[in-house]
Amino acid sequence: MAALVAWPSRPEVTFAVATRRDGDARLDGPDWRAVTSAIHPGRWTLLTEEHGVEVRVVSTAGEHCGHGGDAIVTASASAPIGVWVGDCAPVGLVGERSIAVVHAGWRGLENGVLEAAAEAMESSGDSVRGAIIGPHIRPCCYEFGSSDLDRLASRFGEVVRGVTRDVRPAFDVNAAVRAVLDRRGVASIVDVGWCTGCRPDAFFSHRVRRESQRHLFGAWITDSAA
Image (cartoon, rainbow, N blue to C red; front, side, top):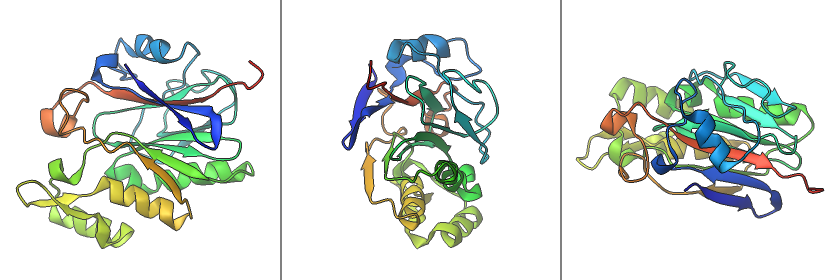
């Protein structure tokens, strides 16, 4: 069953960290409605996830569901939003009024998807106060080509260079996410700490196991008047 995490400074904000036992949350698969409704009964917004930087702003429950994009921002109560991931990092952002969920793989990170989500929150007069990083592939399981790794190190800093278990060059997705958050002054960061590659019992992994299924990372704001 999905783990539910309330944000300490905003208890009305809940993040859901689902596992493979919750089911396949791919938007192009047959099961995502059952997966999402079991976690929250509202009308969810999930996007096509194209490793780009398009951000969708949701004002009403279910708005933009099925549209293109890799990040969702909402300040509306009872409008659950989610991303579906197999190895990419799902990142939740928390502001004073709004929240966001971001599908952050290496291509999206390089292209600036986290910055785009933060800027969408800021354009409404909010700012990112905290972040939660969900399950994703860690350096131990993420061997990476040297030319791409050099380019990413230039973008995010040498901290993103890691090594696999067999001491091959690896990309540290977590370090890249944290580099972006640090540059934006986000000090409050919660990392759930799981590697999708190391946990076949709990998570899907495309890179390690060539699985096509995806698990869900979601968030919503509860109406305080409810």
